[in-house]
Every structure is written in C-alpha cells, then in structure tokens.
Length: 201
Ligand code: C5P
Image 1 (cartoon, helix red, strand yellow):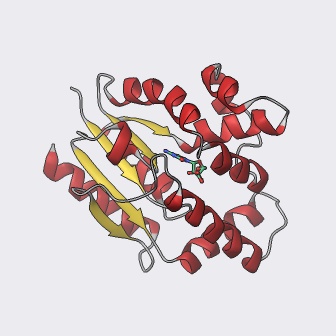
Image 2 (cartoon, helix red, strand yellow):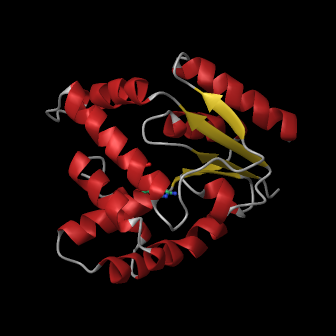
C-alpha cells in the first residue's frame, strides 16, 4: 500500500510527536525532514558549502549526535532558504513518501511542495509561547543551557524566516486539516491526528 501522511507546521508545535505516534500506530515509516536540513546545517558549521553538502548528504548523516542543538537549528533554517539546497533534498523525500507500506513525513513544505497529493495533510500549530515552553523543557532535559526569553526569541525568528522565505515558505496546504495543540497534551494531539488518518484509510 502507498499512503502518505504529510505533517507541516512551525518549530515545536508537536509535529514530531504526532508524526512518530501516527507512524507507530499504523505501522508506517516516519521521516523527520527537519533532520535533513539540520544535517546540512551541521556540515556548513564545519565549513562545507551548503549546496554541495545537500547534494552529497548520506543517510547516515541523519543519525549523527548534536543535530538537535540550537546552533544547528539556526544553521538549518539558514540553509533552508537556498532553493538549490531544497531541490537537492526533494527526491529523497518523495521516494520516502511513496515507499511501500505507508509513510509519514513531517516538516514545513510536505503538503505544499514535496507531496501535494498526500492522502492526508495535517498542519500542526500552537502559539509561540506554548511552543517556546515545550522547546525550553526539551533543551533543559537534554542538558543545554537556555532561558524562556531566548528560546521564545529563537522560535519567533525561525517562524519569520520559515514563513517569509521565497522558496517553499511555511504555510498550510489548502486541503490541510488544522490541528492547534496550544491547549492539548501530547496524547490529545495524537488521538486527533490518528482519527484523521483512520478516516482516510
Ligand atoms: O523541524 P526542525 O526544527 O528540525 O527544522 C529545522 C529547520 O529546517 C526549520 O527551521 C526549517 O527552516 C527547515 N526545514 C524546512 N523544511 C522542512 C523541514 C525543515 O525548511 N521540510
């Protein structure tokens, strides 16, 4: 069976949690496409040229430690504005989406650019404050030093960069289901998403 669930939304809205849980529930493969941009960003921080780094990206690069740091997140959102970087990562994502057995991809442009004919599209969002609070908890738990204000400023800066860029800006697909998780816990967000996918299967 070929079946694609496209999940988009801003940073720390719960896309990853929802994506992983939906994939586990239905036995689908899951790709966090932010890791592709983070892996390119990490290479650029080490001195690589962004387009060459994206073209030569090896799947193992997605598994390296350190991709979740704020520095790499910032580098990722900077390389993500470069159209040739996005083009270099396109085929890998489309191939993943159409693999046998079902796939969930989460990112910023899955429903709009990568998989415009995905069987299900979800746009997962939440207020900037709710997202900053969650991201802060994650960072502290991972042993990073951070304050709420610095994380909130970072979330807003990334939102602006992701929404205002010319190449594949962050926006809901016209046929996406909007899931606002500001007042939902993870279990509630996951069950809303699972219900949506189950209805389309
Ligand atoms: O989702 P995550 O925070 O890991 O993504 C890191 C950055 O990669 C985002 O801020 C965004 O700029 C970029 N990105 C993107 N398109 C995607 C996934 C991530 O532009 N599909």
